[in-house]
Each structure stands twice: as C-alpha cells, then as structure tokens.
Image 1 (spheres, rainbow, N blue to C red):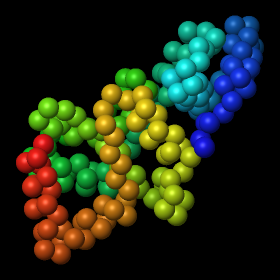
Image 2: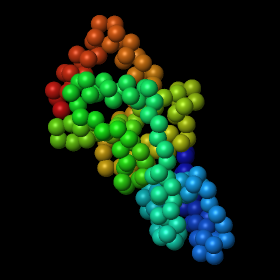
Image 3: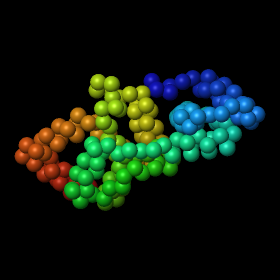
Length: 180
C-alpha cells in the first residue's frame, strides 16, 4: 500500500533529515518538501508517531505542499456547474486545513459540507487509481474534516450521457437533494 512504511524506518529517515537540516547541510526542492509533508501526515496521524523534525522544517514542508498550483480541468468545471445548476452552493479549490491538500470542490448541504474530488484520466492507470491518488483520498478520508466523495471520470461521463438521453440524471439528483 502507498506509504504503508515501517514507522521505525521513517523515524530513522526523519532523524537524518533533522540532523542535516539543523546543520544547514542540504537544500530541499519544493517537490521534496511536499513529499516529506505527505510522509509526515502518514507518520504522525496514521501511525500515531511523534516526529522529531524541527518545527521550522515541518512548516516549510506544509507551506510547499499547500502552495502547489491547481488547475481545474474541464471535467471539474462541468461537475461544479452541474451541482450549481441543481441549486447547491459550491466552493472550488478549498484548502483542507488539517492536511494541506486542495479539495476540488466542497458542496454545501443544509447542515453539512461534502468534499468532492473529481478524478480525470491522469489519476488512473486503466481503472485503478495511481499511488498519489490513493494517498490523497486516504489522507483526506482519515484526516480531513468533511466526508469525501470521489467522482471518477468514466462515471461522470456515464451520468452525462444519461442526462443527454432523457434528462433522467437531473431528475434523480433533484430527488436526492430533497433528502438532504
């Protein structure tokens, strides 16, 4: 599984990183800092371990991770527009404050919010999610503050096809909305 690493091995790596960081012995690229942040989420929150990384490095890694540029796809824009046309409030590219991940959309219901990830073809190898996608979903589900719904592109395309074929989807979604 993605990042299902032995916590003792991670502790050793973090210890070495910490020592080098304290001695100003290296430079980390933004991508490296982002990966350290993801590993730290796994280590601290999924494995319940205490990190010995310097607080300044932890902050640098979070900032590098949270500042990654997002570029909403046409698919994501279509999904958001559909939820808006059904009368839902939608916030796009919402930063999850617990993880630093950017959430594609947050749908506002009467008494709650739901995080939505719209996953296009680059999130999959065939119909199986990539390791990066698995990790993001797992960490958002385990550490995020909202329930997560994932919409794979092929399911959205099927819904879109059905919608064009008799407008059944909009009717079904409207009925579901009344339940919330």
